[in-house]
Image (spheres, rainbow, N blue to C red):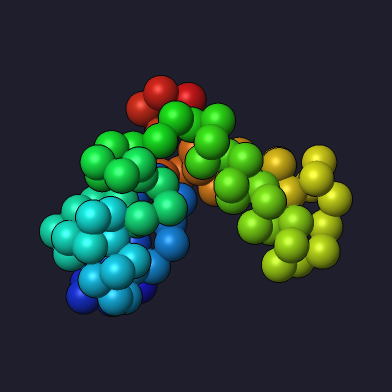
Length: 84
Ligand SMILES: [Zn+2]
């Protein structure tokens, strides 16, 4: 990953456009999907469910497998590795 391309500190999604960032703020550390309308990070359970759903749909895998993938991804992210 290049230094210029930021990624979300919660789900790891690359944030290329300003709209990808929470609140449309390119200095924000999280993406729009991981935050609420005020730019606050959503609870872990919500992020986990959101990522698992994404894996299920994009990779055609079972909910169980998708959940494991999401757990493994999130525990490497700065937002979650402290609390998991
Ligand atoms: Zn995110």
